[in-house]
Image (tube, rainbow, N blue to C red; front, side):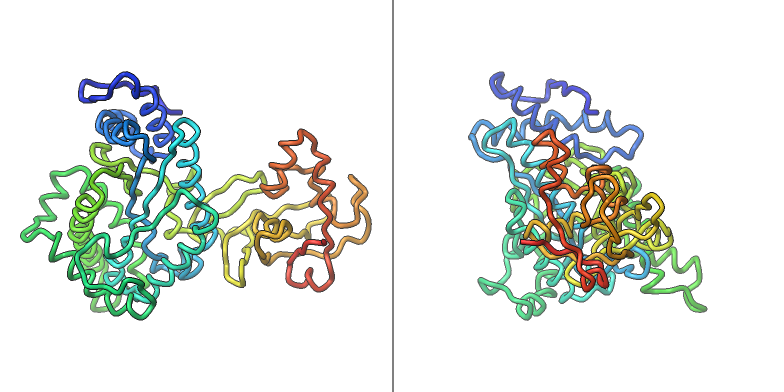
Length: 434
């Protein structure tokens, strides 16, 4: 729960916009990272500055513009952390979560808000041996995922950050061909010679928090890229981790300077823990775990409909979770449900439910068999009792739950007629009957 905002002497808002700006910032604060024990007090210290930035848009009657460096590429640790190279359900949830935040702002401020995602993929990918081509594919898939579903989300372009000769429209080849040019231009135009990273980490709390975050994930990821050997023992491995973490800080300073110059009036958000003095640190996933960035983990839906996040290896090792595929690619996990007297069930997820409503086609890799008779609870022959939405409303896909809630009638789900065929059961796919 967010504490009521208190305006300090550092704020210069006029009386008629105070309430609106405070409501907007309170909504954003609902999405913030709160890992640090003193996070509340530190966010309060940055509140006057953030309110002034928001007021700039409110006074002009324009959408609140926010920007966030994020969504670089999938973790290099494909062995244990993530499901593949491309965005999956985790990214979809993250985009939806940020879009929801912007929509919530629109409920208290009519012009609403926009979130500009500034991908930092090309800033760091070479340090982790991620190919430029993989960064391109990740970004393009992310844009396609967002285009028709998340109207409040926007993406920056390379030409908006650095002065570089680029084609008006980039394709895969021209993007890859200019990747090195972009990194060179970024460091040349915004890098700082003689930057003492050791001193910054020791004296600047924001830098220290970011450095510690980099070091933690590098410790896990680099062991699959630069594994320990006779020539690289434990102590050398630790030195290598810190070396790359410091290089990421150096490049990060240049990237932050480019963002500040090119988007000077935007409200700055961050996925890293911070003091709250210059930026607002937010969680990209509605999870209770520390895995809050979708490119560093996988997600799972629990039986009660809530989302949790963790490395994919944790879900794979837990027998209560099963893997779900979308478009023939691994997407996310779902918690297995066990019905009365029947342990083998079909895992029907929101992805498949979208297919039922004609929105998308999802594949579920699960266990199941065709019902042998009508459901004992509702009398239908389209499902087993273990998958009866009448009896277990929490198992219903999101769009069905919303329909049920809006009508105040659980029986609304009875209008959904689904035929499960022998062929589809072989692949765990459910199709809509028209």
